Every structure is written in structure tokens, then in C-alpha cells.
Image (cartoon, rainbow, N blue to C red; front, side, top):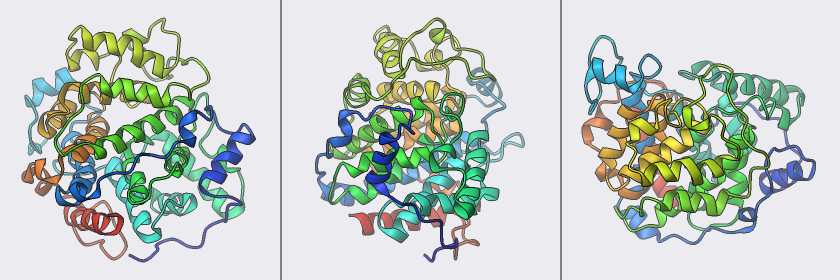
Length: 402
């Protein structure tokens, strides 16, 4: 596909060199942990091809997003259930616009578009794509909007500096807009894995979100996705593996204890009085809740850790859903869509993991066929439905990167 944006402002460094420069200048809000020097283990590529697990990973994002998007914002799990019952398919009622993707899927597949074009992650190429399509983003978060506006200025004038585009790392960037789109970042590394994967995932997040909790979570969340692809097809890990592996990789990345609250949200009960990092929270309240058998919906309520568009709520919600349901693509998506508040984003992230584990064949055909929006606007594909564009791009991703 042809490039759809003009020549971009050149960075003096790229990839791991750029991230190392940010670390050296103390312009990034996390530690340079041990994981940045570790290469991911090689993957068996044949089952990824034969079982269509790359397609499953990518389409899992879209299915989770589309099934959740029609009841996002207006409903919490209780009011959603009272109105619609248990959602197991695209809704067709007048209160819900069915089969539409949002920013979760758009920015995932726009990232994929640029990876297909370049063969690798190029920070300004991806950012430039987002800037070019900013007005087309469906349901864009406030932080993403502000960050892309700063990048628009940087790409034309060089100001503000790159690390300033994501806003204040203390007060901005704690939303889940970086996690929702991270899954394609693994693709250029499948055949020849190196530790550049970790700099790519951090820089991808830093495009819009510079908060320490966000940046400290993107590395272990990417590691979990890589490990998911490395498992035998449809072989979900033991439940507490999700927390144990997160902590092993990401436990040393965050510098400071969490700050609460966000200025628009009530503090979830389990965060009241908590002191520590997000890793500490997962190792304590979240692990204990699972051992005590707390249901997903209760854990994801404001009487638990919450499930709104805050990375401190999204990461526990995603991991808890996987701990409870990763052995089934269908039950994982249905649980994420029904039992969480920010259900489209949480279901999209969950969908990437269980799609990577189970492959495209595990996804109900009607969940894919029911996507009927025209929001991707990939150049040369503007008049083709999102469903058909995504199916084509997922196949191209498998062919190119495997």
C-alpha cells in the first residue's frame, strides 16, 4: 500500500538508540530494567502459520472492540446486563450501533499498515500516520488527541521535543490508549527476535502516553503476548502464570509508587490507601483476589480494582480476564465485553492474547462477519468494509512476517 503522508521530520536517532538517548537524558519516566538487554526466545513459526495465529491475534482485537463498542461509556456491567442481558453477539437494537470498530482497531491496523510498508517499526512513520488520520479516529481519548496535536507541530517545526509530546508524565498519559494498539509491534521480530522488540514497544507507547505506569506495563504486556505466541496452539498457561511472568519481566521498571486518583474518577476500593507500583498491586490485591475466588465482574467493579480507561485498572482487568478464561477465545471475549466498564478496549486487548493462543479458527465467523463499519480508510481501500480490509491485512501480515 502506498504511503499516505508526506516526508516526516527526521529524528537524530531511531529504535533502541533513540530510547537509550531518552534514558541517558532522563527524559523517560521508567528505569532501564534488565529486560531491555534480553532477546525474546525464538518461536516455532510453522504453527503460527498453519493455525492462523497471527490472523487470530489481529482479528481478536477487532472482534473484542466491535462487540464492546456499542455499549461502552453509557453502561456499567450491571446496567448493561439489565438492558441487553448477556451480550454474546453484535447487538441490533436501536440503542446500540452494532458492528462498528473504534480507535482500538483503527490504530492497531494503522500501525500494521506502516509495518507492512516499512518492514519494521519506524517511530515517526507510525506517528505521522496517526497525525494524518487524527480527525478520523473514532472515540479518541483526550491524551491521545493532545499528544498527536503536539506531534503535528513537532513533525513540521521540530518543537516541542519528542519526549514532551506525550504530556506531563506524572499527570498525563495514564489512559489505556497505548495498550489497545500494541499487538502488531511483535510482527517484525518473529523471524529474528532481538532485544529491539522492547525499545519498539516502549517507543510505540511513548508516541501518545508517557506515564510511568503505562510505559512500565507495555514491556511485560508485550512479553506476555510473545510468550502466548510461543505456546502450543490452544494451550493456555496456568492462571497465575500471567501475573508471575508480568512481575518477572516488569517488576523493576517503575520508579515511584502510584499516584491516585485520576481527576475524573472515583478511586476503586482496592486502591484506597494502597502504596506501591502497579507490579506491587498485581502481586498483592489482584493475586489474593484470584486465590480467594473473587468473580471477574466483582474484581472489575469500583468495589475492586475497577475497569475504566485507566491503565491502573485496564492491566489488572485484562490479566484477571485471562486468568479466568484464557482457555477459551469465546468465553474470554464474552466475559470482557460483559463484565468490564471500558469493555471495548479491555476486550480488544484480551482478544489479541487469546487470538494469539487459539488462532483465527477459534473466532466465531459471525463475530467477524458482523463488523460492517468503514472506519479504517486505508489508502486505496476507502470504499471497502473494515471487515474485508482487516481480513486482507491479516493475511498479508502472516505472509510478510512469517
